[in-house]
Length: 132
Image (tube, rainbow, N blue to C red):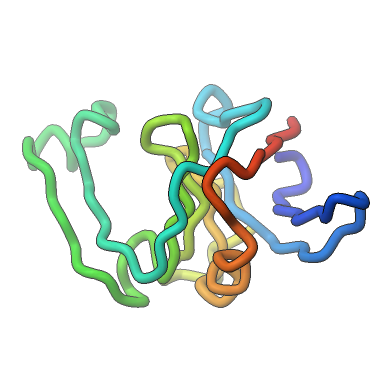
């Protein structure tokens, strides 16, 4: 988290990929410890569920789920890698200039091209270790 970087490490401990990543703005929203990949989806829909973001003015105003179709301008970009913590994942973004800043609700946000590169390296059950 401190380095705002996502590293892919092979079984021999070698770094095979290294990407800048955005993390949660609020420290209490940053998951720390071992998580697991639950799903890896190319070109996902984006579902905004107000129950997941009760602090959001938009969520209070909308009051219902909103589903946006796939595409590079989708809020989760071109890939969604779901983690075993509800509402958390690793995903792309339509705004790559913001990657590397602390600007998410809790997910790990990559440039779309990095998310696309990462996607084939993921599988369900893969451990994801989040270090402070």
